[in-house]
Amino acid sequence: MASVELLYAREVTLGYGKKEVVRFSLELRRGEWISLIGPNGAGKSTILYGLAGLMPLKSGEIWLANESFTRLSPRRRARKIALMRQIPATSYPFTAYEIVLQGRYPHGFSQEDEKLAWEALERVGGLHLAASPFSSLSGGERQKVWLARAIAQQTPILLLDEPASHLDPAVSHEIYQLLKELCAEGKALLCVLHDLAYASLMSDRILLLKEGRVLAEGPPQEVLNPDLLEKLYGIPFSVVKHPDTGKPLPFPSIGL
Image (cartoon, rainbow, N blue to C red):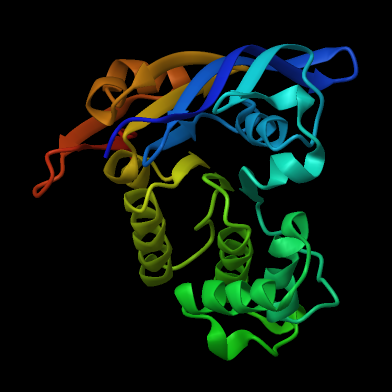
């Protein structure tokens, strides 16, 4: 698949009020998976929210393909970028299907939108959840519904904030496999992860983010090394190779 740049961010700064939280540059291509990793408070989620248009740019520029990000209306922007946030603890007074259908809002509602919402639920294996109140769903089921909502939005770019957090290994694996399939179909993924093993196995490139700055960027084999990881988290790491892929598998080397 030819490399097509879908998102270009240059010297972008984001923050709240007068406080600058993060400064970064980023290029994201069709079919590429980039993971953002780093300590809590490093600015990872802030990057996603800025790229989704949920907070204003303090400086810098963002381009979506050949269009200026700041010149796009929120609705046109939402046709290009979908955000899957961390699932909040609060409940929503909607069914699972109604949550997924909300992903079609940027396109307007029609019978075609209803069809796409059903297809997205089916894609995540959630058709049986359609009529269930969102508040009644388990954590894994909620993650699937939120992912279906992002899929239904049918954007070339997906921004994902810890898409498999707090889930058991089987459900996590199911979600990551689906995300990898979306990449193979040409979607571009920018994903916040704390699971370093999955970040290594899934990512084409990784950005190490510390205190609002990019510490390093590159393929997993380059950036997931003990020296950089210790600089990133402030604790020593050991790294072994995955027996099948040869990709690095880091883990804290703390004596217990």
